[in-house]
Image 1 (tube, rainbow, N blue to C red):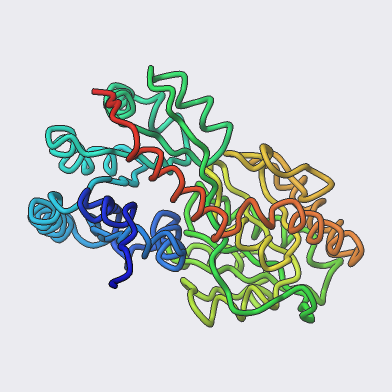
Image 2: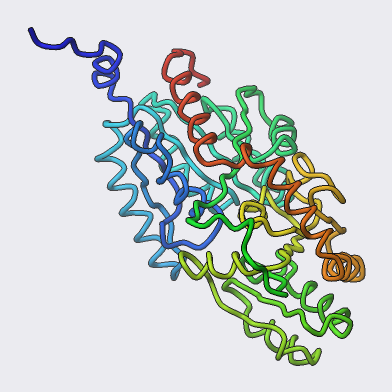
Length: 367
C-alpha cells in the first residue's frame, strides 16, 4: 500500500502558493539588497519557493529603464505562478517603479505585501508624493515596516491597519566574534554621502585623535570617497584614516571582526543594517537616535547616541569608549543579549513564513 500524501501539501501545490519577491538588483549596494541577500539564506525562502525579481540597478538612466522594462516583461510571464507579491520599496522613484507591478497585482487579485524601507518621512510620506504612498498603503493587503516608530508614522497616512513590524536581520557570518582580539579601529560602514554623516565622524575623530594616538579610523563604503580623503588630509589625519571602498563577503567579515568601535552618525535611517551587523559582531556602537534605533536599544546601556551633526558630542562618545575597554565590552554584550533573537535571521524568517500562511488563509482583500 502506498503511503498517503499530505493533504496540506497537496492543497498548497494546487493553490500554487509561491512568493514573488520584487526588489532592486542583487548587484545594487544598499539596505534592501542586503536584506534580501540575508532572506535567501533563510528556511522560508525555499519553503515558499521565493523568486527575486530584480527591478532596478545603479547604472545610467537608459540602462535603468531597460532593466525595468526587462523586469516587467519577465513579471508578465511569471506573475501567474505566484500567489503573493512581496514588494520592497523606499523613496519616491522606488515607489513609482513598483506601480508597474503593484497595479497588475491588484487587477490579478494577488495577495500584496508592501515592505517599506524608507529612511525619512520628509522625503516620502510627508513629501509631495504623499498621495502615491497613501494609494499604495491603502490598497495593499499587508504592510511591513522596520520599527514601531515607522509603524506609527505609516498609520498616520493610511486606513489600512494591517501593519506589522519586521526588523531587518543581521547578515549571516561564519565566525563567532565574541572572543576575538579587537584592534584599535573605529569603523564606519555605509554609503558615503551627506545623510550618513561620515564627514562628521572624520572631523570628530580628528578632534580627539591626538589623545588616542594608537586608534585609527576605517571608512568602508562607496560614494563620496575622494572628498572624504581630501577632508582627512586637510585635517592632518590622512595617515590614520583608511578608505576601503564597498566591502562584502570575507573582506567584510575580516573588517568587522577586527573593529573595536562602530560608528554610524546618520541624519536619517529606517533601521540601519550596519548597526544590526555591528551588534551581531559584538562591536560597541555609537550612533544617532534616528529611525527605530531607540525602540529597541537604550542610550548608555546598549549603545551610545548623540544628536545628528553634533560633532563635539560625537567626539565625547568616541573618547569615552576609546578610554574604557570595560565600557566597550558592556555595550557590546548588552546590545547582543537584547537583540540576539530580535535580529536573528531564522526567527525573522519564521515570522515572515507564519504571516504568509495567515495571508493565504484569509479571503479578505483591501481593494
